[in-house]
Amino acid sequence: MPNDGQSAVAADHAAELLELRVLDGPNRFFTRPAVKLEFGAATPGPAAEVAATAGLAIRRLHVALDFPAPRITLRTSADRLRVACEAANPIKNLKVRDGVFEKLSMDEVVPLLMLPVGLALRAA
View 1: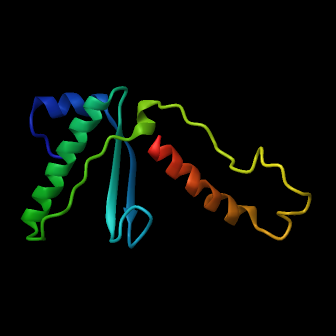
View 2 (view 1 turned 90 degrees about the horizontal axis):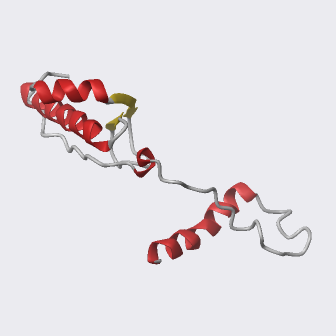
């Protein structure tokens, strides 16, 4: 990553690259190919600064190669902020007759049952 000044160098030491993923086609994150860079640090500031510097470097590379301008999205990830989360099981406390779920694949049914739970949590 090019060096744009002292602040980027200082942030470089406080943040680290957690993930570099090449998404070569439509996937659950994007509808077109993409490259995902994820930086982490003890606090969000240094990681955000390194991510912004990486974004500028990618834009410069596109200009130098005469490519169309890239779409760069910067996000702060909640799970990097140490937010507590809990696994949910929508049928855990459901009382039903024995054998009701026998002919169903629970791996397929449970995600469908989580949809209304997710929508309810959004409204709360």
